[in-house]
Length: 488
Ligand SMILES: [Fe+2]
Ligand SMILES: [Fe+2]
Image: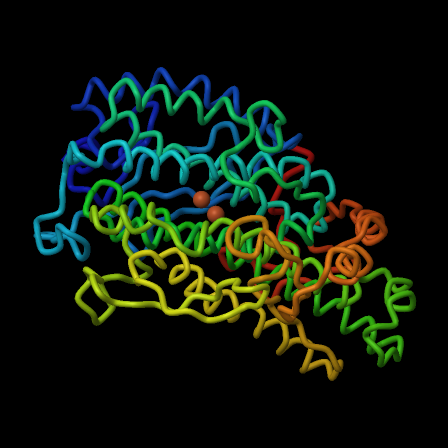
């Protein structure tokens, strides 16, 4: 069997052409041409807006070689511009039916249903826009990497976000004709944080100025990505479902990088405090003098990144979300595991809302509250990460707990955008908020302090003092493994 025929079976990736794929691109001349036309622009974008520096250094990266859950990736040294970005879909599920919405029970669609073309395109473009955005946001971090291990993890996340862009561009070019090609061009044109042509969603225009922000971003914002992909993996449009299912395989590592990253920062702080005999975690000056990040400042970073990420879930009450669900395009988190009618007419869901300047819980039609349901599932998922951090703090015997702030805290979208609240959800007047803001969110001075710690450490097996080494290496490699070859 040739590589190309194996590719049609869906589990092996065909690397013989310019674009690795498991969709038999060789026999789809139109889409292959569209992708090959898009390719140079992508490489230009990567070189301009991808990692700043290190483009010619061999990095120990994983590359997908198949889409079976076991053994889908191989590890090896790759120069990033030569990474095999490809089009990979999870294997088709025999006889898959649509799990929810008005078309529940029908055979999953292999083509775009005409009446929801615009809505589907919009969902794909919004997801697609976040992928290159995070690469842009993180592009300077290699310069201050606290170790080669961390640098490699950053670049792994970056190349995979690049592949996620490819995944969405494939769907646009294969199923949306000329409009799709234009959208694919636009995805390379917008820039994170650009005043004239920003990325589509707020959190993807924020800066990621330091490594603690990177770890928070991968903990929280990549987890929003996971939730969105989970909801789209349920889609009645089967190519979208299969694409998202494979993306989720990669996404798990991004959250691992985030949660273990913050955990290692917390660990270094607690250890330094113990060694120095500091019992009071709020004695910020003394803790900082040890060259580690004090726990209250880590809490502020949690507050910032968690609240920015909540905005990504959109309005509490949303007819767009209801329409996408009714149209069987975007489901709920693990829709196929839920035990209800999957249509939701007449069902209700409790939502926190603002009423007469008070936060109240209100039962609203479940269809209109789908954003909140996904957000609640996100919060439960994120709380697991925070628990792991607290176990590290507890084990060190430090009297401190990291907490997720209230959903009304520091919001720019939805019910609570018009008010100020503290991290416990207590409403504050504007003057009090102004006065206390720096207690809740990283201040300029906090930023200056953290930046002062961001000094690169490029010796294999060595780590910046503000972050503990990981428990194990990537791909079982030993502690002093050279994850990025800087002198090659
Ligand atoms: Fe992604
Ligand atoms: Fe990600």
